[in-house]
Length: 239
Image 1 (cartoon, helix red, strand yellow):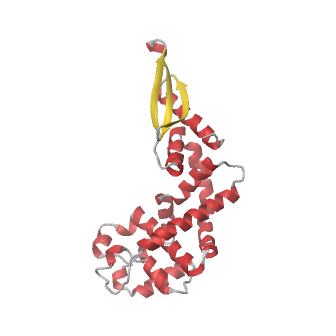
Image 2 (cartoon, one colour):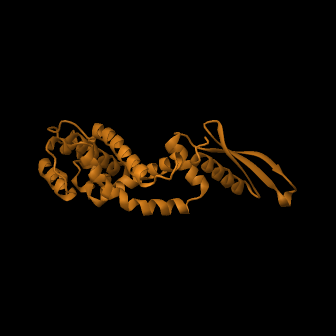
């Protein structure tokens, strides 16, 4: 499908039929589908989707937070934050966009199309956010939630499987970047014992603060123990 060969309003109408939604204000969905690369080639368009992307990001984050809060009443803030980060990350939103074939309906410049823009994760996730921002403005939070939840529900099994298979360092990094906007660092505090039987002690620090410590027969094992210690404390609300 080539959006340059089709009327933009026809394209917007086709996307709404595919997604099972209908906008009262058609200019909102048209803008949500407008990539910035198309503005110079389609000068009658009055703006791209970047402002709607900003709004949609907030809408998706709120719906995800409430969904997880209601679904997992036993989980602590740290676990919920990491799960929300999974649901709203670029790769997840791009997967949702592909389920709708959203890339096929975007108004894009020829150069962007030729460089693979229709399949790029960053472009697809941004467009999905823009659609949600537009839907929120057109019909409110209830409609945005009704649209999103069918995408979120199947992700729970994938999310929980991924969390089980990830090591402690990976899970701690996801949590710290989502909750604290910082990346953990690992500092070797001591190494004791003879060369053939060393025991390492490592602290994990985030933004200069120590969040956990661990020991092990190798630095890698000690770092994993430190990360698990930090996760346990975060989940228990001790940090």
